[in-house]
Length: 402
Length: 88
Image (cartoon, rainbow over all chains, first blue to last red; front, side, top):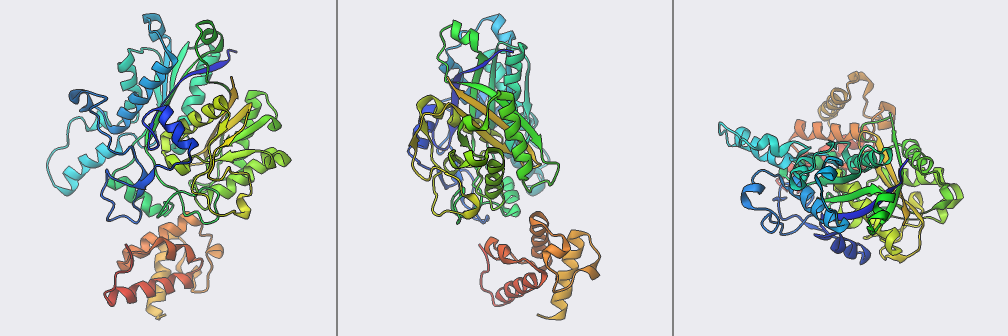
């Protein structure tokens, strides 16, 4: 089995329009959560989100090309461009055929769909824009990435709610490991800010009226985010041979299903996914130094995740550093695991752990070292990134310092 | 709490949770009725529709049994008829 090197990263999200900007914001503990600009929230019980403020397609895409792309697909291509440039990929026809694209997205281009349905349902116009379908489909991100670079290998999209990007990255890693492809572009993208989607989230009563305070006793729920994160994966030997800079190694991928409840998380299911990732990486729990938590700041997730970590790590749980960067980039749904994978990879590379921002008071049910509010220097050899989706579908990635 | 109000809330809970109405009494706890957090959110939605009110998240969090739901609805109805805004 081939080892998997991460040679490129790309990000566009609330905290930054490049991976570098995103990472600096995270290390400064600066949250991108604030009043939403792209949607009028006056009829909604919450007003805040982590948005790519002032975004316009024009520095990135010609008008005619942008006409064909929902915001989520634009984000996918922007992050993919950065990741490919970061990895200094030199394309050949052969490589294009041997490259995979695996993206994650939860809601796809639903804001485009929302606009189309407003036309027929509310404005009683008789027609919807003909690009509604190709802009809405969840695989549009993968398709536009393939057209951007002329990639002709296996390309598809995975949709497992908040775990989408983790399942995508894990699947892409297996395609590299097995020898199926020689390069993979993988991650996730999401742009969930439309009035209809926000009303649906409001009805679930899990969104915080102010900000996202993971593991803090006074937490009031999650905050939605948008953006994309993309990684370039390649076989370790090939990356080393071409002299590529390797950010980190992807060493394990674990999955599980809770088989329990459509929204309530299960500590047992989460624990099984973490154990599966450790087993796949062939490492012991004591070797993990940092966990980028799922950490949504809902009443249910944070104590459940804490219990799951305690059950997997035993006494070592007290020596672990964990943080939820959702406190800064929000919960970007199908892109969340990609943003968090980038944060985890750069933590290993730079020896700096991002904090849990907005943290105010300890909660006895979340009694782990959550790196409150201030980044911490720490040389960590192995780290996990947790994703536990609605629907009980869990995915955990394990990374190693290069 | 008027009997009529209790009756309407009981009906909404029974219909939403799809359990016989006689199982739902004003003294039932959510636990006894097997109402989990997602069920509770659905019941709140049904109550908002039934009474044309808007139940704030903070109020919603405090309701853990049928009596508290009736009391909460009563308070919001009183505020509505007094013409004071009840929620954002």
